[in-house]
Image 1 (cartoon, rainbow, N blue to C red):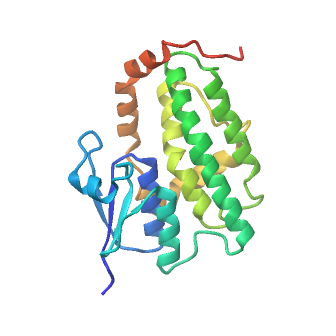
Image 2: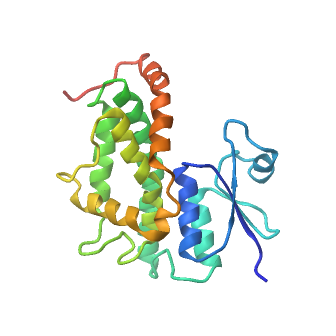
Length: 234
């Protein structure tokens, strides 16, 4: 009998989305334990005392695995099924590099851009940075393929996919386009293919809920934007 797999996560988290997609692509049964991040449980404190964040993967009686990309690699190496990372070492290195780029550059700039966009600064420096980062990702898309992983969803698709739904939600709430057919045709096609994949769809949070959550926090974001005047390119 296989060891039980449990995932501590929260609804709407782009990082929990990564872990769920990886588990489903590998065909691994798992139990999702929902965490209230406004009132964190003792379970989360126990299994991730380092930063008290989700996702956290519990596999049998092993120590917990934390951080979404680490979890995806663990799932890829531990369970049977089509590999998520490229077979060659160079391909794996490139996938890991661009996955880190997504976390260290794209994700952070997106949240910064959201604050300025909602406050009415559509051409703020953070928003322009998001567009530049998306353009860089556009250059990495393999010509003639459906996904960054080739013909099937792979590691880098999962890394980028975690922020895909949120990006669209940001655009809807702020009323400012960031990802456009004109500047990012390959990425736009990729988003459509990724979002309609049956495995991915099972792990997507309800978009209306995300829109409502962000909309309810508009005044907070406007307040955060007030202390400084953003550098604009108008």
